[in-house]
Length: 355
Image 1: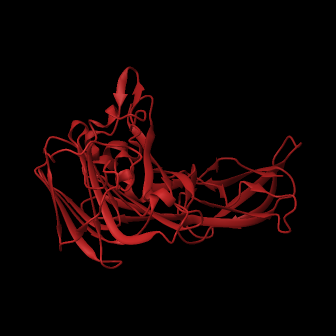
Image 2 (image 1 turned 90 degrees about the vertical axis):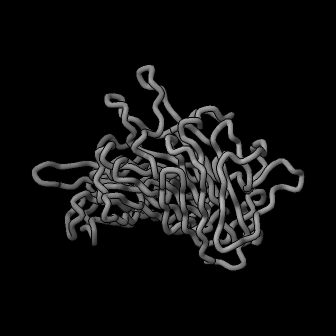
């Protein structure tokens, strides 16, 4: 996937990317009626704009209250095009038709993206947007697709109907990861920014065709924050599609969705201060068999040591999650191991520094 910078939705609230305002090639409507969200006072563009040359359209509305339910309908679409669908709000349903896209969503408090760390700058509202993914490699901030074997690698046709729901007003689609043998995507990525310490949510809907194309079962979907697999919830639907949801805290993070690791490991801290009274870090992860009371062994290698030593065992909890708190007094690397069937599997290595 190519980098669609804040073009898609985030900067629909911003003026950092000055898109021309033209006559909409598509139409949008909202029910019940809501006040249009204004653009910047300098007239440089805003959330109700279009860039027909790149197939990008957006619309934002001010809501009277938090949690107000709206239905936004995009009409007169080209049924041959594959649109990325994004909502800054609590999206509850999306219906992707041949020439229409209908979104049901609840308004949320949105931070002022020009003063992202001032949480007093909020207002209830919602923003929606669609972008023709075949045209998104023409933007000014890099490429969302990758070239592998001389071929352009972008969102496949099977991603038609994919949508995102989030509460961050500032985000960028990032290049995903591709299998170099098959050329198929393995993950999708987005960078998100919000007020430091504030709670964030992110949901990504995967159509059945996309899961099948990538060879991922809905139960094996996972969410990653800064390349660490995090606890996430997957909702599966009768048609074989799935919605993956995860919560986190801002500031700026790269979120990734893809197939879960056989055994994951993450830490709640990347570094510990020498002056801290509590030099403890939490190790946590997930074991792919999803069973309770499975043994996971924790290993550590301190700075200057050549080998890892086992420092403890922990048993998995519901759905295969586990955690262990460890004291760290000097730079240390950690890994986890577990036996699945007759073979041992190993997690990624995580390092914690002490400064």
